[in-house]
Amino acid sequence: MKALFIGGTGTISAAISERVLELGWDLWLLNRGGRSFGAESGSRAGSGKNSGIFGNCHQIRCDISDERDAAAKLSGLEFDFVADFIAYNPAQVERDYRLFRGKTAQYVFISSASAYQKPLSDYRVSEATPLANPVWDYSRRKIACEEFLAGVYREEAFPVTIVRPSHTYDERKVPLGVHGKNGSWQVLKRLIDGKPVIIHGDGTSLWTMTHAKDFARAFTGLMGNIHALGETVQITGDETLTWNQIYQTIAAALGKPLKAAHVSSEFLAAAGDFDFLGGLIGDKANSVVFDNTKLKRLVPGYVPEIRFDQGIRETIAYILSHPECRIEDAEFDLWCDRVIAAREKALAEIRALK
Image 1 (cartoon, one colour):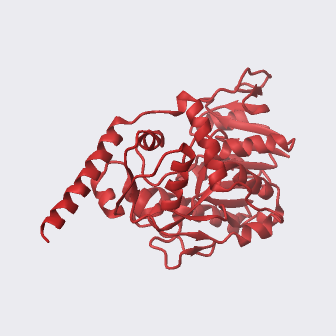
Image 2: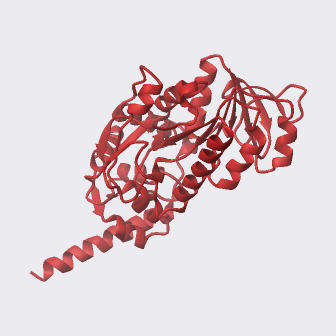
């Protein structure tokens, strides 16, 4: 199979790229080359074979937003499969439609499970759950992309498959409910230093984590799958955890006690400059249990293999041994201290009224 990935080096797409190469497929990556790939060779301008992090793959160095340049570098190429891992607004999928119409047997758009109805009318989520997210513009843009692609599938048989991931992590990323602009390290550091960490709500809402390697195995089962054309499929793990369990598992992997400071999601959204309105109220504050029946019908035999406690131990071990993954965030750390201090002050004032 000849596959083109637009992006191909992110949390989800890197794992899929590695899986595709393991399967012996012909992989092409179209991106700006921001992540190291190793030496290039080959005669096509802006493309070549790589022997770097993804082994023997082709790379087309290009900013996909420059449609004229992308069209020139894609000239004469056809693919069995094209996936865009970085598109998030309708103009970008419309560009992809122009670039790949008649040049691929399957086009996959990576949407988001955050596009599902908020607030949910039922915590059980399937592909039939309505799409509506009034508080997160990111999710509304994904919905608009899906609507455009559904239209060109119905009207012109453009061979689209829509995939909706939820919270996916890999060896470089600890999945959290509340963190700052520099990622997860500052929360881990607070745990290591014995400081309290903020958990949104009372920590009992339900959530699902998916390891990128499990996601990749499910995703490659949809590649070249004729039954997936015109379909929307969510890919998530089957394991359901409370946020208290998630943070407790992370603390246990660090060998540290969890000192939890529970703060309402509404308060966090109002008190922070960290896009908690969309990320919490529009996503993680809601209890979700994903029904993956459709995925397993399309990919017979697929079962997620990596339990969260197993995956997160590997992630934390990787982060602790790779300094480049430990980016401190003094602004977020100070904000956490202030929010927790405000919480304690409010509790003390209420107790004093008794």
